[in-house]
Image (tube, rainbow, N blue to C red; front, top):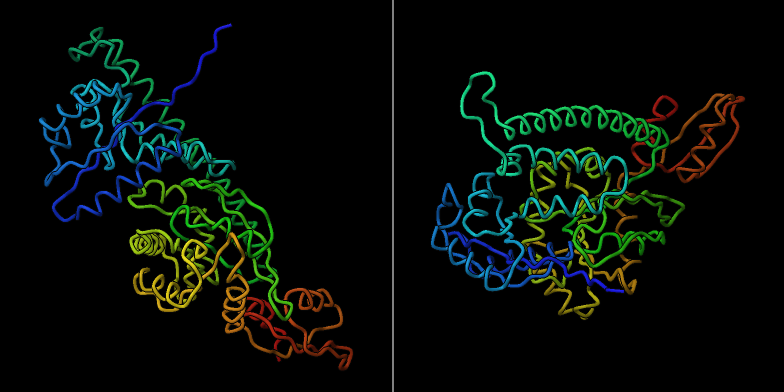
Length: 425
């Protein structure tokens, strides 16, 4: 029996250093692209950072640079070139003709990773919607082997033209169907959110650069095991778990999709409903990989996306994660905080060892407390359900019967206080 061994596709990475980019920044971008293609299982055969000021309208890079890449691809027997920047459909087509190998860009690689990692129905719908938006203007190159239309008269339409029109109609129809299905999913999500908010519990959202350790932190805080992999975008779907704090207070902690440099805008738009968990959270934990040499850039990228989606950063805590890789003495903690630009009060933790987790819980508890106050409430005798809810969701200080009514003094958060405002005395 003949055994066939699978050889992963070999790729050459191509970055372009523009005039406003330093050499180290260009290398960082290529290094991140290498991690992206590694997540897909590709082999990196070589990487090149080319100089360029204004992108060439036809090739993105210069014709001489394209010829050099063609020779390199031929020499290394590469299967594809992967560009760190987004290419237009025509640039992609022209580069493939010039280099005689497949050409992809960062946008396509990220889409493919999202496609592989989407699990829930909503995530799959969102990814497919973004994929179709990417594919539609690129249909032409899929049918270049077929004949082309030569005129506008009846009967002169070539096979390629017909296939293009069929595919465009199919994609457009599928896009409309996806939008209808997503609207239904969003309605369901909104209904579930209303049910949660009807019994208010403070919410904490974990945000940060991809692979900063958000899933590991969720496990460390709540004890609930979730998927943890040392790969970019290991999880796309929000995961939530309850976490008990001192004084009987509970919060819901949610892990969200990670951010990355040059995250395609259509993916931010596609995952808008998922990111609403971030926008609506009472507290944001900005998880930073403190051991990353690019931590400052990763922080800036995350903050830019938070601003784009309209997330309120008033109650934001910076969490310096992976401190086990740096050490916990005063000097390393201070250095890590300075390294993460503008951070002077980050909480150092290690999701792996659990170090710093108790201090982070205290920090969260302190923020929750600032939104809490003691209130006196008076309930009619037929509303013991609300009294029971107070025992579940607040800290009851005192409870007594007064003229057949139930008088309760309780410490609660602002959401619960607003919900029960008509009973506050």
